[in-house]
Length: 302
Image (cartoon, rainbow, N blue to C red; front, side):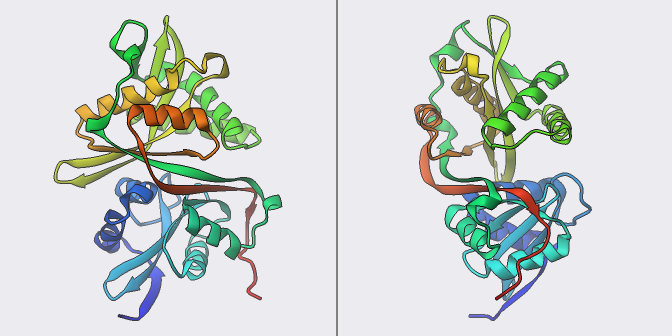
């Protein structure tokens, strides 16, 4: 076994990183999608990040990315302390959150010496996968009961408001004016890239669903990751969210996607039932940890 070496990734390392992520694609959608969308050079632009990797010879054994939005996204069974320190020192950003396979996020949280008082959210997520051919389309989408469509510019303000409500309810964040502005800009990008769908009932928007990551694996294979599913409280328990997800997947399938990934909180039973009804199956556990205040310095080693 070759001795491990550690360094920040450069653009020419993309193929090596791709080989690692291909073998762990279901839990690597953010890493893979951001790499394809923005490359490996970090100029502090959306979807860009600083990537720290452990090399075993010419192959990457693990990676941690510190992204423009201050989140750490991890994919490494070992050496997380060294990789996190390298990524954070390279990016010179504070840490705002940690995402990845549950066991790895728990280790990272402990390395950073984060207690529950430091966290606004620390949530186990159930990771699901769906082969597009197994999609069960809700009957409501086969009738005149609901209309599904891609979101357009006229939906922007409504979707920005829904995104803000999602951040407050699902992620537990205290909304600020800056966060509302970020929600507006994020939804603007999603609309422009065609990654958000709306469902209407009686001409009224009642639910939305987006893809927060998309990956082209080549050889006529691509994967989408569902995220940000939102139904306003007054429209819940009517199947609208499930219909919005199904509508997005039907269009993605037409455009060549073969698989879909999503994760949802382990205590969100209504969402779990909806995704199982669509044909998703659980394949593992993810974790989402959000800090109450950004961590601006790495804890001192004892």
